[in-house]
Length: 115
Image (cartoon, rainbow, N blue to C red):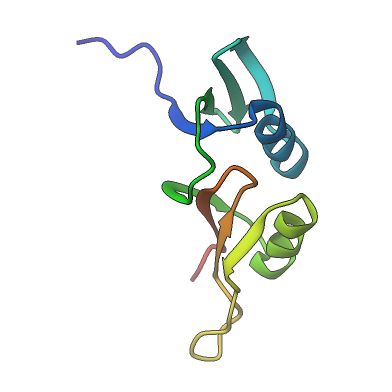
């Protein structure tokens, strides 16, 4: 099998709101789009947002590595998302993880490079 493309699909009840969240917060750019799905491109990755979501809390497996998870978490909240797990120091080291939720209920994490 020859794979042509890999993308990660998340769901949205309000696709326009979801697209705004990811483009404004992370700087993703809109790629292909049709009434049912919008593909966002970010650092060579594709996040595909599909209509028909129910707004229920769903773990996605998405992780975005950022330099500062505390500042990043604040940006998530300012963009309309939530923090389900605030970034905290661990063993005297700066926070390296923040668990977040987008406005559509999709859970993702922010992480800081360690070591």
